[in-house]
Length: 474
Image 1: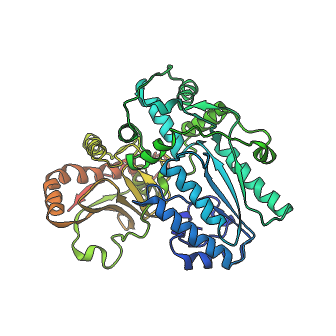
Image 2 (image 1 turned 90 degrees about the horizontal axis):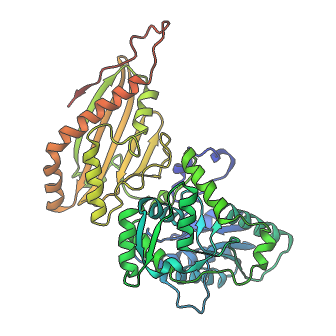
């Protein structure tokens, strides 16, 4: 179930599953989506997607519980967070527990699996651990780096979720259950950072805990040095002040008798980054999938400012689209990369995402995923790529490429769209116009040149040199 089924079209497993549209904040969509189901996994979190994520999570759970009851589901499996209910829990952990309570209060039985830090390439917890360790060889940290937890590998989480379904089918029951899951190692966050450094081939980190760094200051610092924005980092940091340990390991041991050690989980995750095999990332979750895009007839009420460039090349459309799809990340923006880096720094300084999120894969894009401070709004291979800006802006911005095969070769149309908010939005756009000429035109030409250089001519190649020359028409 997803709010935007089209975003799954390029996934390799798409033809092996049935996909339905649904939104946990729209109860009617859930009733339709759950029709014909016996069991459901509830893996939803609103942190980072809503100003008041606790209220949004509560509403989503209430809607889902009612829809499950209307469809007479046998059981819901929910992945929540570890922590004793008697503790003075952080807002994040308290919300995780509340969601479990709300689901369990409905007519459908619930199995709630509670986990601490989940270790896997692309998870928000692992990204925070990874960047803090890699960027900072020495750091002063709050006392929470010495809190104890039981990190668990994503593989063991998936094993547990599958096993608990199998057991529920074998042993039908109407009782609710809370199952604590965790890896075999009890570690502090400081221990986890040092282990990551060893696995990644880094020198041992100098970590000095101090009592003066509040969770608010910590989250701002994390927002500056990692891809995790401070708004997401704050509730995570608040949760790290608790010791989150498995009190009763028996239920988890029955599901996963041989959980993976922390070091092995880190080794697998690091290898996935090295091989570019990151299937999904936490940042791929789009908080606003219903935002209008430039193809909508009434987008921004017609008050749209544009900067369009067109390039002709003799490279085939597939090569042009390949060059377009490589934008961002390590490749950068083909020209004036320093300007994009500066823009990323400025965005990070005012609380935006900056360029730190990078790319999931160096050449392959999926609809809905994050790319630096953009999000892939639309991808139609090999003809169209549309990026929506997620940096801090006084308006909505998009960057689009359309690749068209012509009698002369291939045309690449590149257009920047901006729908300003108020006077300041217009002043922002016009103040940047001098830079547009320095950036957007050369960018389009360089993309065309890169596409043409991908073709390696041979003695039997009668199509010309294969190195098309881009010409910009404005």
